[in-house]
Structures are given as C-alpha cells and as structure tokens.
Length: 167
Image 1 (tube, helix red, strand yellow):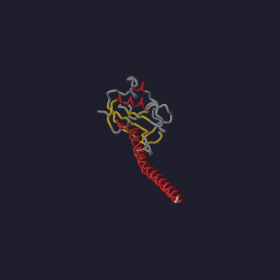
Image 2 (cartoon, rainbow, N blue to C red; image 1 turned 180 degrees about the horizontal axis):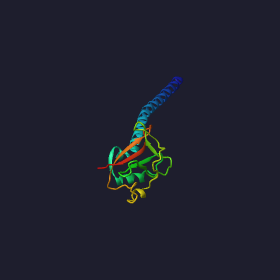
Image 3 (cartoon, rainbow, N blue to C red; image 1 turned 90 degrees about the vertical axis):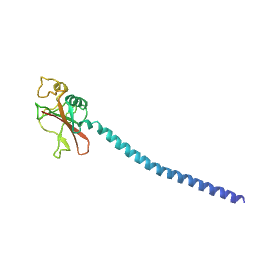
Image 4 (cartoon, rainbow, N blue to C red; image 1 turned 60 degrees about the vertical axis):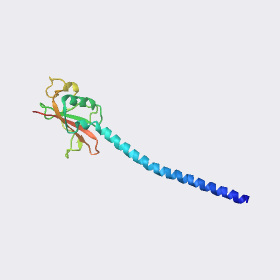
C-alpha cells in the first residue's frame, strides 16, 4: 500500500510539473506574438517620427526665414543637402554643410537623389544668405519659397530644395 501511495505521489508530481511547463510554454508563445507586434509598431512609429520633421517642407510654401532656419538646422547633418534657388540666382546654390561630400541633386526619376558633382556654388553660409549686399545669395525673410523634399532609394530624405516664387 505504501508503494502505491508513493507511486501516485510521483505520478501526480510529474503530471503537475508537465502542466506547469506546458502553461509556461503557452504563455511564452502568446506573449511572443504580442511582443513581436509591439516591436513592429514601435519601429513604424519611430520611422514616422523621424520623417515628420520634414513634413513642413513636403511640397509646401514657406517663407525666406524658414529657408534660413532649415539651412541652419541641417548644416551638421551628414548625407543631407539644402539647395536654394532665388529670384536673382535661378541656377541655385547649396547651403553650408559640415560634411564636404554631402551634396545631392535630383535623380533622373525625380524621387531618388544622387551625389552632386556639378560646379554649382557650395557652402553658402547663413551670413551670406542674410546679407542684402550679396544679391546672388540673399534670401528675403518675407519672400515666399516652394519647398520640396527628395529621398534616396532607401526612402531617407537627402535633399530639401527651395525655389523662390516670382510674381
């Protein structure tokens, strides 16, 4: 009788242990799906936030002050260009960028950008843009510019182009 009692205790112990292990595995599988979905949502929200700062320049009209602010804000960003065309300088110029090789132009499909090897002026500072005596590069703070953003083939914004609206 004692052997039967001991055997039953062992059998019940093994069954309870297996049930606990099975419950743990099922909780893990359910939670893993939730964690995976949460990670995907976090990644997507992070991408939306990183691109949101450019939304004010996406096919919008901005003032000259906004152009100068953009040139200042993005001058230390690697792999990024700000290109400006004024009423007196239709060919345009690149604003100052701390990274010498970060000059991009519009690609052949108008969506992708590529490194620019043209001889357009590069490295125009905000001091030059705000100096009315430097007529080729001067940006009137109250002037109206149309802004466009361009992305590379990976979907990252690489170029903001500002063109002054002439009326």
